[in-house]
Amino acid sequence: MYHKNAVLSSVALDKTAVILYNCFMKRKIIMLISAMLTVFFVASPDEQPAIEAIKLVTIDAPVMTQSALVQLTIEAEPATESSLKDVGGGVLDVPEEIPPEKIYDNEWAFYLIDRQNPLPDDFEIALYSLGEEDEWWREIDERLAEYALQMLEAARLDGIHIVIIEGFRTIERQQEIYDRRINYYLGLGLNLAQSELVAGTEVAYPGASEHNAGIAIDFASGSYDVYSFENTREFAWLAENAHDYGFILRYPEDAMHITGFIYEPWHWRFVGVERARELAESGLTLEEFLMQLYAE
Ligand SMILES: [Zn+2]
Image 1 (cartoon, rainbow, N blue to C red):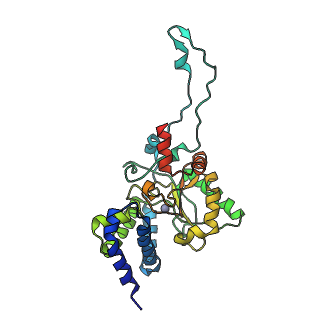
Image 2 (cartoon, rainbow, N blue to C red; image 1 turned 90 degrees about the vertical axis):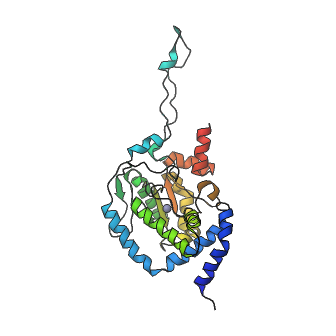
């Protein structure tokens, strides 16, 4: 017999140099560390008090709105012809009605938030609680609440029981999770830069998380185990239907070189129904989709 933790630590130390050289391309190594982290996370009984800490932070969280984010959304103003008609005293042959450009539902939710595009300092949000107060943290931006509720109800009618692990997080809470993940890797023997590098593929930087923006939800099956979620009927149902309710799988498999994040089958991001359908049809990540959109 050997001591499991000792073996895990030595594996991590052996891989340190490789991680540095291949930080975003060697997904398997990162996933190995992730898996190790899972063991630590799930098996560690001292995680339980942290859940209580979440609730305390929730209660104290300021109520905010996110008007400042409007400038980050895609513009889709209706086209007007007034400026086109009068040219040099003549009148151009233009149709009376120019069909407006497509106006999408929930344009406010269609933007990128990441380390390079964090929330503005004056970010505010109006929250809606999707669940009972004494259950897990289930608050989200109130504007997407009806979509999430309709999706969960549709799943329920199909015999699929999806549970919410987490919605909105305060930046303070994000900092706690981020620091704890870095400390975990420091404890395995990685240096600070290495620890930040690896932790950053699993936990968004404080202020740069879609959870901080209240526009992402972590789902699970009834087991509440996000790491096995991919293999459940609940995940299959979401993969089939979530886009019809405005949600996309934000960090898909084999896309870490684009998204910067490991595969997160539990993490679903609201972008509006029409954009979600377009994204699902395209098979692109949000980053790729936006790049393509802006390149046009
Ligand atoms: Zn998440």
